[in-house]
Image (cartoon, rainbow, N blue to C red; front, side):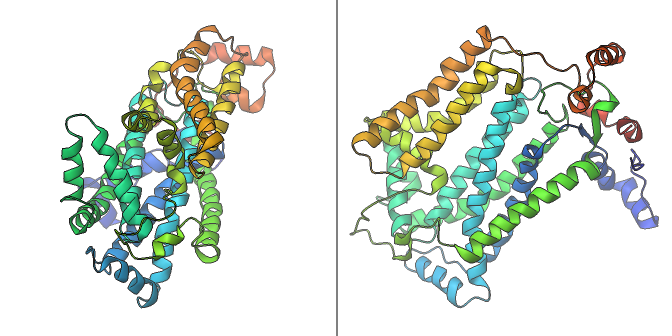
Length: 438
C-alpha cells in the first residue's frame, strides 16, 4: 500500500508557525487521515459522511433563505413566494432546503437501522450511541419547526395539532402549550418563536455532531463482524480507503438529491401548503411529512390522547434503553440467526407504520397500526432481552482479517495465538499506518 506518515508534519514556515500555536492540522490528520478503521467496513458505514454533508447543506441554504424570509404571520407566506419568484435562484435554494430534509432523514434512518443490526450501541460505545439519539431528537424538532415557517394551510394546522398534544401532559401541559404559542392560539408569536428555534437548533446539532465524532474516535468504529481490532492487520487508514467509499456514496446521494430538486421538487411537499394559512378553514387531511409518519401512526393507534402522546414520544425514548435491553454477548446480527429474523420483521413493521401513518384513521388501518405499535415496543422490551438469553450464536471468525480473507481454520488458530489484546481507537492511532496495511 501507499506509505502514509502517522504523525502530521507541517510544510512551510506558516504551517509550522500555526501548528506550534494551534495544532489543527495534526488534529485533522489524526482524525481523518491516519485514523485506523476496520478493513471490513461496508457502504453501510458511509451514511455518516452523507449526513455530515447534508447538515452543512441545510445550514448553508437555511442561512441564505433567512436573509429573505419574514417571520410575520401576515408576511411569511408572501416572503416565501418572493423567494421562489423574485430572488435569484431562490427557487433552487428553497427546493434544496425542503428536499434536503428528506435525504437527511433517509440517511439517518439507514444509519439507525445499521446501528441496531450490528450492535454498535454495545459497550464501550454507549455514550456514542446516546449522543446519536440526542442528534435524532434535535433533527425531528428542527424539521417540524421548519415545516411551520412557510405558513401555509398544512403548516398552520400541523402546528395547531402537534402543539395541542402537549396539553395532554398532566399539570404542566397547559403551560407548555402557552409557551409554545406565545398567546391563546397559534399565531404571530408562535411563528416568531419557531423561526428563532429553527435558526438555533441546527448549530446545536453541529455541536452534538462534534461530540459524536469525538466519542467515535475513542473506541473506534464497529464493523460487520462486531469483533474489535486485535492487531494492525485488522485495520487500514481512514484515508484513502474510507474517504474513497464515502466519496462514492456522497456522489450517489447527490445524484438522487439533484433528481428530487430538479425533477420532482414538490413530491414530498403538501399541496395545501401552497394555500395561505386560514384559521377558519380546516384542511380535509392533515398529514405530516413522510419521516414523521411512523410516529404519527403510533399516536393515532392509541385511542386515549395522553396514551397516544406517551406512546409517540416513547417510541423514540425507548431507543435510549437499547444498550441495556440487549442481553446477547454477540454484537452483530450476522451471527445471531434468531434475532436476525425478528429484526427483519421489525424493519417491515417500521415501514408499515410509515405507510399506515398516511392512511385515514379508520377501520382496518387503525387495527393494523395497533398491531404494529405493539410489535414495535415488544421488539425492544420483550424480544431483545429474551432472545439474547436463549439464542445460540453461529460460529464467529477469530479476527477481522480472518473474516475478510477467509483464512483456513489452522491458519486462523495460529493467527489468534499470535494476536495481542484488542486496541482502542486512541491506542490504534499511534500505530504505524504502514504496518496496518501490510
